[in-house]
Every structure is written in structure tokens, then in C-alpha cells.
Image 1 (cartoon, rainbow, N blue to C red):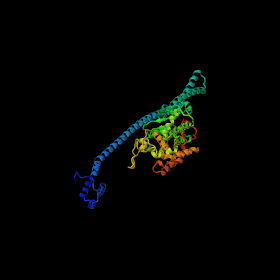
Image 2: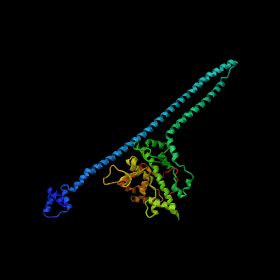
Image 3: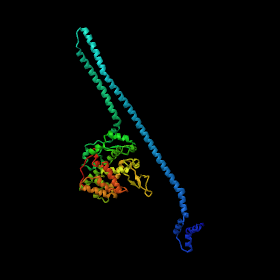
Image 4: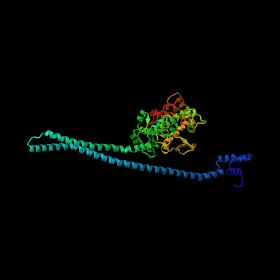
Length: 491
């Protein structure tokens, strides 16, 4: 093929070389064909065009090998990081198991010594009886021999009984207290010391100034009213988490009855949560971890609503209050300073809905997104850092949004429902319940969340089933312990 030919002439020459009859007939009839038509006919006859050859050559020999190598490097990094994480967890588990076995050894040793001591004490009455009889007879015979008169055996016996009783009482009291008290303190030291020291360091004691904060909006924004126990990223095992719940007396039956939950905030799920065999225990553990996070965010929203009503009711607002309003307009994505729209958006997400969606999207805390990225609600992202889904359509480029801690995921989820245009019906129905002074019921609002998943109405049916089967509506009135209970806002 000659180099000086034009591109169109080269295509015609290719047609002659490969004997493309369709193009030859057009040429015989002296009909002009465009470059695109020539390319189309050649491709239809499976003839490689020079420019296609170049692009395919570069793609096959450069792009594909490079992409394959980069993918292998990424897989190697992921595998190595997983192995390192697994090794570190095994080291931590080994330390915990070894410390537990040592403490159990000393505890069993001490208990055995205590049992031996009690057994020895049980021998004392027999020894005392023998000594009583021996010394009683001996003293009686000796005194009778000296004074040649009969001594009263009952009086001597009574005096000896008093001596032995006093000695036995002191011995039993001293050994019993030291034995049984040390058994109890040994159990308490193993399970409670760590949690109590963290609670003393991290929990702020409520003072009398908190009652005055309701009257002063400035103090409400800056100061925390709820003492919090935040558990850092320690790669905790599920067994350790369950022991912690038992130590602090965290029981869902009590929460359902008293409508109060302790502010215990986990930063991540235990990695071996899926290893729990009991489905009921797995679900209860998940609810115990997520419930305080949801309730805390809802109470924060209610505090903002309370402050917003106070500001709106004023005739004059301070500069600080105006600045606070500007921040809330930005946070809830309200345009043109529309206070009415801000009131509609600044409201709670029913605890039952939040728990049901968290359970559905995270597989009750066992999904890869929940364990690796603290992503409880499966929110998508196209710009931020995220986790690549393993099975997704090639046409979609989304990722699952990653969070540093679990509470950040809860906050982002509530902001999503309160601001995104897809959930306008949800907010409108919630606002209507407020206007009619009705309780915000999760089951009534689930039907408005069809846009949250691609399955639509099927997704809302699943949410309703999760709420009913697990009695999640019981948690809707739950509030944090030591939080300030405010009256229902009249919006």
C-alpha cells in the first residue's frame, strides 16, 4: 500500500486487495462513497482498518498488560493488609487468652486454699470436744485430789465451752471474711476494673449548671449534657463486648421497659460478630451497639429544634444566633434562609426505621462494608473515599461511602434523609404528623422510603417486616440516660 495515498484511497485499495464486491460495484457505477461508508463496509466484511489496527495493537500490548499488573499489585496490597490485620488480631487474642488463663489459675488456686481452710475449720469442733472431755476430767480429778472434795463438772464444762466458742467465733469470722471477700473481689477485678476506670476518666459528672443551660442558648451549643463512654478502635472480640454489656448491666429487656439506654458508643463492630451461632444473640448485640448512636443523634436534632423555636419566637436575635442559623441552613441545605423549610428538615428519624435500615444494609453488622468501612447504611459515593463493591454493573462507577467511626455513618444517614430530594415525601409525612400532634411512627413512614433502594416497594416491605418481627417500635421513645427530657415541640 502506497504511503502518499489519501486515507480514502487507502480504503479503496484495501477493498481491491480483499476483493470486496460491494465496493467494486459502487465504483463501477461511478457512485461516490464517503469515508465512513467505506469503513462500515470494510468492517462488515471483517477487514482490519489501519487505524483500528494501531489502536488495538496499543490496547492489547500496552494498556491491558499494565492494567492487569496494577490490578495484581492492588490485590497483593489488599491481601497483605488483610494478613497483617489477621496476624495482629491473633496476637491480641493470644495476649487476652494468656492473661485470662493466668488469672483463672490464681483464682482457682485461691479458691482451693479457701476450701481447704474451711475444711480445717470443720475439724476444730471435733478437736474441741476431745480437749473439753480430756481437760474436764483432768481438772476434776486434780482438784478432787487436792481439796478432797467433789468439784461440779457442769461449771467447769460451761467455762470451757465459753472459751472454745469465743475462740471458734473469732477464727471463723476472720478466715470467712478474708476468703469470701477475696473471691468476690477477684471476679470483680477481672470484668469491671477496666470499664470502670474508663468511665471515670471519660464520663463527665453532671453538675448543677446543666439545669441552667436550658435558659442560655450559648451554653447549650458548646457543652455536652450527656456523659459518654466512647470505646476506641481496639479490635475487640465479640466475647469481650458481651462481657462488657454484662458488667454495665446493659439489657434490652430493661431498655424496653424503662425507655432509657446508657450512652455507650462503639467506634466499630467486633470483627467476629458473624461467628455468633445464636441468631437472637447476634441481633441483640447489633441493636445494643447501634441503638445509643441513633438515640444520641436524634437527641442532638431535638436540641437544635428546641433552640430554633426559641430563636424564631424572639423579636430580636443576637449575632451569635444569626451565625448559628446560617450554619444550620448550610447543614440542612436550605436555600434563601427559609425557616419553614428548615423546621421541616430539622427533625428526628424514627429509631425503628434507623435500626431496620442499618440491619438490612449491613447484614446485622456482618457485611464487608460495615466491618472495613463502618458503613452501616450502604450510602453511595462518586467523589469521596469508598469501598468498591465486588459485584456491580460495569456501567456503574459508584462506591460505598467509608466512615472513620460508626457514629459518623449514623450522622451522614440522617443528614441524607433530611436533605436529599428523593425523600421529600418522607419529610412531608413526618411534618404532617407533627402538625397533628401525633407520634412519629416508623411503620407509617417506611412506605415513603421506596427511593432508598432499587427494589422500591419490595424494600419498604422488608423494612416493615424487620420492624415488626424484632419489635423495634419499642425503642422509639427511648432516650439517653442522664439526658435532659424536654417537652414535645409544638411546630
